[in-house]
Image (cartoon, rainbow, N blue to C red; front, side, top):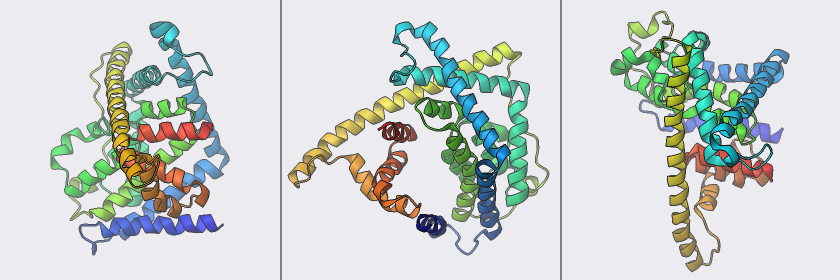
Length: 341
C-alpha cells in the first residue's frame, strides 16, 4: 500500500515537473490533464482487471511469440547454422534483422488491406472526443502505438507544414513515448512480456499528449483541427499484396540496419567512455566506476517516486538512465539480462 501511495504521489510529481517546464504556466490544460489521466486508468483497468481485456492481451502475447518463432524460419533459410537453436542465447544482429523484416512486411500487408487504418481511427476518435485535442494530434498519437515515429506522421502528411508549435511537440513526444511493432517484437524475442509492452504503449499515447499539452499549451484551436476527424489514409503505393510485402521487407531491412549501426556505435562509445570514467574513478578511490553506475545514482530518485521498492530502485534507475541517455534498445537488453538472472 505504501508503494502505491508513493507511485500515486509520483504521478503528480511528474505532472509538476512538466508544469515547471511549461512555456505558459497560466494556460494549464486542466481538462486535457484530467481526461488524459482518466484514459490511462481506463485502459489499465480494461486490460488488467477485466476478463476480455486479459484475453486480448494474452492473444497479443501469443501473437508476438508466434511472430518471433516464425521469423526463425526465414533466418534459418538465409543464415543457416548461424541462426541459434531454440532455447540458445540469441545472436542479436540476426534476431533483430529477421524479426523487424517480418513485422514490417506484416504491417505493410495490414495497411494495404486497410485493417490498421480502422484500428488507428478508432483509437484516435476516442482520444479526440475525450481529451479534446486536435484531430491531427490524436491520429499521430494512435498511429505511434503501432508504427515508429518516422512512419506515423505520414497519416497527416498534408498538414505537416501547418502544424502549430503545440501540435509539433505533441507529435514528437508521442513518438518517443511509444514503440514500433517491429521493435516490440524484438523485445519479446529477448523475453520481455508482450502484454506488458502493449499495455504500456497504449497507455503512453494519452500520457504523452497530456505531458505535451502541459509543456506547450495550444494558443488556439484552428477550425480544421476541431472539426470532424478524417479517416486516416496511408498510401503505400502497392499494387497488390506481394508488392506490399516487398516494400515492407525493404523498409524493415532499412530500419534493422539502422538499429544495428546505432547499437554498434553506442555500445562501442560506451565502452570507450567507461575506460576514462573507470580511470578517473580509480584516481578518486572508486574502483569499477562506470557510466551505468552513475546513471543509476542519478535516476534512482525517479525510480523511487514511481513506486519501485528501495532494493530495486538503483537497478531501475540505471535502466531509466540508459533509456534516456543511451537508447531504449540498450535499456531493454539490460532489462532482459537482469530478468534472466
